[in-house]
Image (cartoon, rainbow, N blue to C red; front, side, top):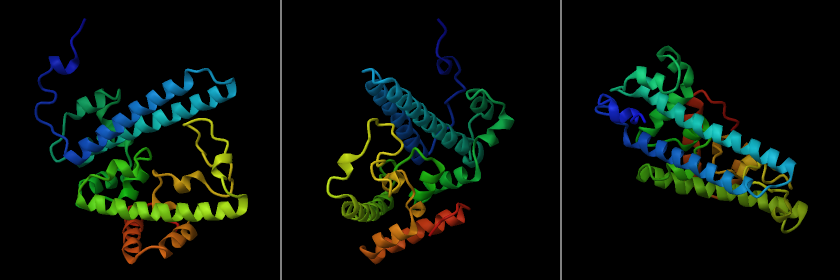
Length: 248
């Protein structure tokens, strides 16, 4: 049996080091992918009826692909275009079964902006989550003290507009409206399908808050402090500067 590649090639891994913010997020993305596989194993084994099995399998495949692609894009963008001391680009390409000339096709400008934000003193949660859709707030929270502070403001904003959704839905559909949803799978893309008046994306922790409905955000900010409004403006401005369309 052949030995693992890295064990037989001392040139790989001897010099290049990932910055801690990149390494930390990459590791969290890898663990998230493993959690998805574990969840799929637990959910798909019991033998649901065929239609649910089909839909849940498709949902799992889509989620797995998204997570794997985000991890690949993060590391490729950093290694190919941001790192000051690069790894062997020949190896980076080879391990992806592409030529070195095709590496630049594996990321877009927004990915570079997100990587640079990760390496800055103040990371933009919205920018990183827009560039890498499988990343959520929890994965960025412990980047530094500033990120922990922003995470709390961000959580307040999310909770405020989620509360507004609950209040509105409660008036229209009565108490317990969430319990009457049709969710059957962890991979259901619309866990709030029982209430068609609101997109599930509005309360998803992976959704950039600058992409939420302006009226919903305005309702949320009206219940919060000026610090929350200032933070939201920082995220909105960062998204716009990166060339991402903002609806607010």
